[in-house]
Amino acid sequence: MAPSMHNAQPWRFIHRTGSRSVALYGDPDRTLPYSDAEHRALHLGCGAALFNLLVAAAHAGWTATVGLLPDPGAPWHLADVALDEAEGADRDLADLYRAIRRRHTSRFPFSDEQIPEPIIDGLRSAALLEGCQLITPSAWHADAVMELVHDAELLEAANEAVRAEIATWTRTARADEGPAADGIPADALGPRQYGVSSPVRDFDPSRREPDRAVAVFEEHPQIALLGTVQDTPADWLRAGQAMQRVLLQATLGGLATSLMSQPLEWPELRSSVRDPSSAIGFVHMVFRLGYGPQGAATPRRPVTEVLSFE
Ligand SMILES: Cc1cc2nc3c(=O)[nH]c(=O)nc-3n(C[C@H](O)[C@H](O)[C@H](O)COP(=O)(O)O)c2cc1C
Image (tube, rainbow, N blue to C red; front, side, top):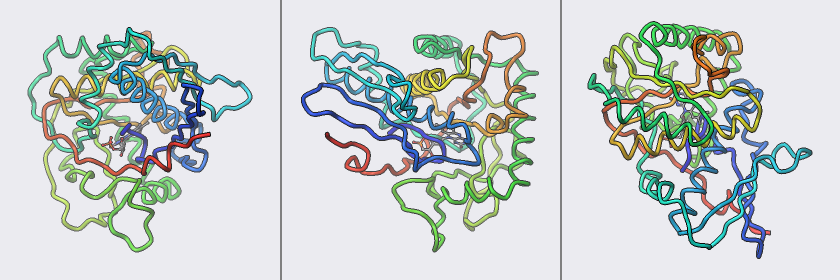
């Protein structure tokens, strides 16, 4: 149920019978060579899937111990999770379980209602618990991020390979499109933005979907940036866990959420997304938060494809 870039679901879980452990692997067949050449987004999605596993374990009353990147010689082996039935499961983690199936990316307009500061504070703490930082940019910085989103849209429009990659993962009932169990379905696209004031990606810029509505989005989107001090694969996995903790907690708090990585996908834009006065060295995700419709559920591959037993 975790979010992943373009809903590529780049994860595989292996349970070694009798071991009480689950190993998480990235799936090299589900990379995005043009939008995610370094596999940072892949690690974020897998970090989110790992966090869901920890939440589910806590919900079942188990404790879990995580080892990130346990084998330096095997970069696709992202984590080992040792499960223990001993008393002491984390209740705060277990509470988030209710949100796993409720959370969806919402590409709909949100209202202008301000999110109360205690809710934002709670989301900052959620990120800190996973060793990451969440900051809400000031007005000038939020405008600057929106400018970078526009720049990313222009770079994307001019880059045929990136456009083709996005089209590969968008499901608009074309004859040649990929399987229905992954990618972004038409009913999750949301309306086309009139004016583009809000950081919501248009997955159908070439207008294959004829009946898509047009809507005015919030003029001052409420955004938050998730970042870390360093930028290693372990940081990407931690950022994925923090991203999912923030999303699940926001969902329980009644917020609708969407994710935006467009300006982070271009090395020439990514460094400008950070606030030079913050302690964040590298930004991994731009959240849009607010009050509005939850997005539609997107498909997932069957469990038999993502979990195997050895
Ligand atoms: C690393 C990463 C980057 C993403 N970038 C974007 C983005 O730029 N725009 C967007 O609308 N959604 C983005 N998403 C959200 C995914 O498209 C979404 O998670 C996926 O389609 C599954 O849908 P769900 O979140 O509703 O379960 C991103 C997700 C991840 C994990």
